[in-house]
Amino acid sequence: MNYFRGDQAAEKIVAEIENNGGRAIAVQGDVSLPGDAEAVVQATLAQAGRLDILVNNCGITRNQLIMQMDEADWLDVMRVNFGGVFNCTRAASAALTQQDGAAIVNVSSVMGQRAWLGASGYAASKAAINSFTKASALEFARFGIRVNAVLPGFVETEMIADVLSGGNSDGIIGQVPVPGATSVEEVAEVVSFLAAAHTRHLSGALIPIDGMGGGTLLLGKPLKKTARR
Image (cartoon, rainbow, N blue to C red):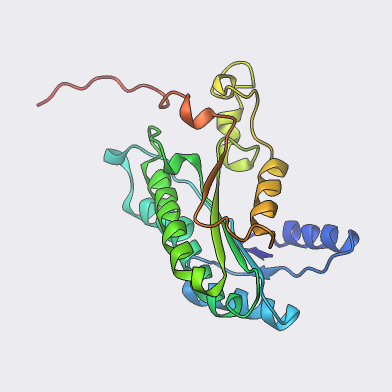
């Protein structure tokens, strides 16, 4: 398990996996840096001796309107969200080709398929992941590596705590046709399904798990009309 910050939280997850009969290690690294992504993969191989599944699940957001967006924030989002997927996929590809039934699962977002005010950078990074998923699925098919993406909507995480603060009956979550926010466990179940070796012909898919929110929600807080100069 890779982490960037929060070593105590990472070790807690490792302990939970081991207490349930698994083996786990936590490897620190910034996957937006190609060298760090390579080091994470090499540390995994040194411990386990093989690599069967890669789950790209790193993301940040720096939401701001385009006219007010800082260039550094835009680049950070693209480097982490999409750059991390590319770096880890490239770093892991050689090891994955050595295993039958290998799989890559990218955690994208429904925002990669729709617009949301103030989230152009985040949406663009996730749209890039969606296209990269299809392209890499095509490239890796000859090696038997399946590549798919999960597209969550509003998931109960710290990243969107401000969005969820309106409650399930008021605010944005109240507009989702299937009531409530998506749980982390729901997303994990879909990731596990896509990683399973029995789904041999499921590749290049973009699977939303958003309670139909992506197809029905508004576009965010409306902006006041500005007269042309």
